[in-house]
Length: 414
Image (cartoon, rainbow, N blue to C red; front, side):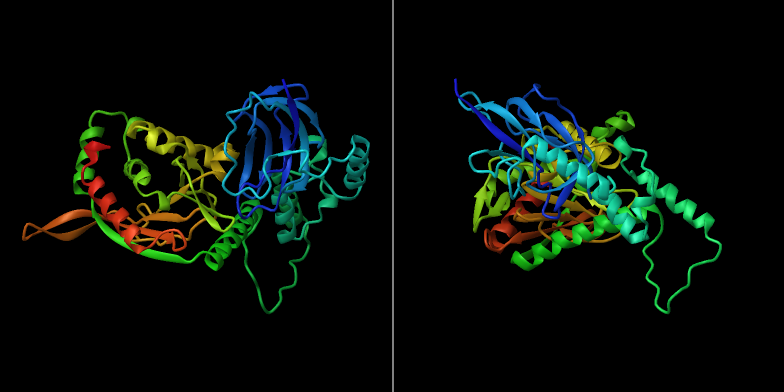
């Protein structure tokens, strides 16, 4: 049976990623892995992400030591797969300029182990080990990493080391620094630095989107009175942790409809639209310390409403306190952003490339509606759609929003 060696490379975990730090290998040489298994932990401006294998095979070589920072596409190791039995390969992530695992016949040859070790030794002697986030924060706070003792593996500098150094420098300064006539305030501490780094990455991705994607925008006001009453009835007698929330109902309604509107679900790459059968709904999660993450709920069209609620709770929790998987951050086929209870009627999102649409849900509010020639006070929500005019047009978008409105007024069918 034929075998083939493939390179494991630093993955692209979004349009805003240029490099990442390999912080931990979760496998060893000789380990057998299945498609979808986590094989390493990568730290980026999004935090620590578990990198998954996109093939089934055996890890043959690990070429890079933990706490090494490398650009997207850099070779991290090799694995051997059985090309005749590896028929269930997972689709590559949405934003992946170079695949996570490349055919060695097409990729540049990996450096010899001796050369790799020599290069690593020279790098370690001149550059302290630190992640991209740590380096960005150090630049913002004007900290010299050479003088910081790291508490991580092999002396790597962690976020807590920066925080300690920052506090020590503040307490040891005999005199306050001279202030210029123009002061730029970016906040203090590692949290603010991390926020600034994440904000810059988000801005870069959105600038690219607005520059390259011809957006069109639509909005529609949806009557959610029936949905709210139905949720109240369903939650009667349930424990708080088992209750259904409106965001889960919205996700479930979108997932149910998307197969009927394929030009809103997929990717625009290489000059054309790539339709996908899968429905992976990216959900914007606001982080308590600032910034956001957009993990995907996979195969959302195949989940029940209860399962959708569980999946939403899971990715929200892991976005804020745990680790997300690489596929959850790279293969969303459409994104949902929600204002929640923040007091804004609507939000017009910016498409996250290479996706072709993003839905926005405003805050739930009461408004006067005319029904059967009578004025009624109803629970209403403004739904917006931003879509790629290269793939769909306003007629398709309007039909989708109308169908979504009708679906949400019949919540028992979800």
